[in-house]
Image 1 (tube, helix red, strand yellow):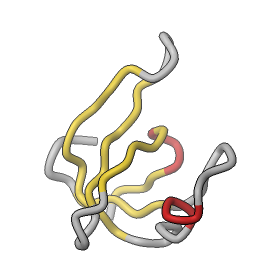
Image 2 (cartoon, helix red, strand yellow):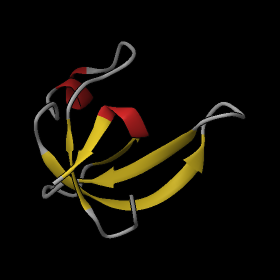
Image 3 (cartoon, one colour):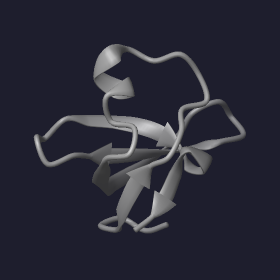
Length: 63
């Protein structure tokens, strides 16, 4: 995965607020990467409505 790449949210690992759950199946653009728990990398995704949040890599699939 690369910055600028389009991805689709395919699942969520953990509980999430409604505004994140509503992104299931939606397509967004990778904006950045972040360390999340010392061993994993999070992917910061921005959607068409400018909502931005992060996901684990295995929650996303390239489009």
